[in-house]
Image (cartoon, rainbow, N blue to C red; front, side, top):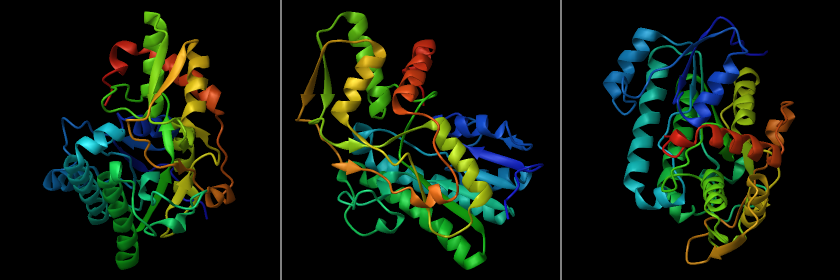
Length: 317
């Protein structure tokens, strides 16, 4: 039977982030009451504060999208912060949800939970079968812990807590701070600024050969709301498009979208990260869900948003 969101109080943690805000937009199509709380009013690392908020607000449903996130540079530079903050946030929210009687919770993970040299495309069963990518190991360990915590609450207490592992996300509301951003917003900003300054070239990290899968955040939100309604099991679900592209191919596509005709130079002194990361989305497809955005269309949408929000987008967190 389909789990109904109608007439329920639905808490979206991290509602100001790219994914959380997309979930809030998606829930506007549901007959539910959306609950949010700003980080300056509630620090999700504060166990007592989180428990008190859940006891007071009594949500029925939780989409747990809050996390400390960043690209390769941020993950590699601040491993202690990424590990501690994410462990604290997920531990407090998941436990408080159980204690306050939340009916269903969806925990949002990341595809970086999989081994660096996982089989391609990566099935859910590849979890914990090999070593992680060193540059984002701390974040990955925290995300694995959250997934396993949901499994443990389901096994020990019968809690209907599920987990979804999205691929690389992009879209409106992304973080364009070059020190913290992921590959698509960083590349869009670099190419945009190169075009504006009349630069002859742009430089991209690594060799350009790694392959990555990208999912528009509105498609991700659509999949997450869909899973909340139709899925209930211990094993996590991969969320992606089922197609990937090389970083060099991505750079060329971004240049076309932005309208930059300069050269693309690779900096092989910078890390490539995982050689390939393509998710097996057979389980998700079996539920009847399909993505809407093609990559070019999604990049065009993202660039349009960046142009409209450039003054603030560079420091979006």
